[in-house]
Image (tube, rainbow, N blue to C red; front, side, top):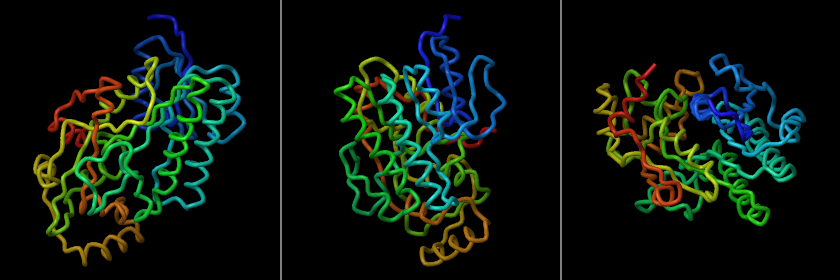
Amino acid sequence: MAKPTKKIVLTGIAGRLGQLVAKRLHRLGTYQVVGLDRRPIEQLPKDIQHLQVDLRSRRARDVFRSGVDALIHLGLMHDPRRTAAELHSWNVVGTSSLLEHCGDFDVKKVVMLSSANVYGPRPENTQFLTEEAPLMAALDFPAIRDLVEADMQATSFFWRARGREIETVVLRPVHILGRVRNAASNYLRLDRIPVLMGFDPMVQVIHEEDVAEAILLSLADGVHGVMNLVGPGEVPLSVLLKELGKPTLPIPVNVFEPMMRAMWRFRLTSFPMPELAHIRYTCMVDGSRARKVLGFRPRHSMKETIRAVLRG
């Protein structure tokens, strides 16, 4: 294996995507990986360093002080059960601190994983949203407000840092499916899947391993900008559910909303009520910029992507 030549800080390394990216970087053999995550982690190659630190702490800043070539920021918190203060402190203050360290210590590459959910599923959405579309998700889903703000921080940093030759990449993938623990995968893992009567929106999904591949492509010299990531295409929600072969539970909208609120309050579901908009309205994005700039093409078929939620 080649001797590591670049040092990468990877936040969120204890998560599913963090582990996928860390192991891919390790196989390349040209990167020294330092993972930052408050959570413990067991299954990592021995030469990957994991520091159980808070992203907002002095210890995290000290990692950058010793010299870092690139930051991959996967450490945003997606937990609607957290308080607004916790989410804001971790996502907004934490991201701001990391970007400040990158500017202070001359980090040459910043890659942040955001989400296409920042655009928001809305009845008036155009067919395929480009990266210039307004980020409207927070209007109907306050819990995502801090994710939108963190995305905007990274986008602003991209414009400010260009003069200092810091290449910044903000990736906005569509619904990620696999062993990740997110709203989309959790929804599709339900034994009986609730659907809204009269609604069958088109949806876009992407395999977790394709997202990991796009992150690695973003590390290439000269790559920068905001890019949507799309998978193998788009299908009606009903087609996606049919592929999984699971029974559905059609429910009228006026029944679904109070039912989900009650189930969420009593911790009978991990699917937050505001996510209801994603199985009601369309939010499809244009992935042509990532194809052109990154050369990104999803390797997994629609069938493989959908059925990835059944693995493990």
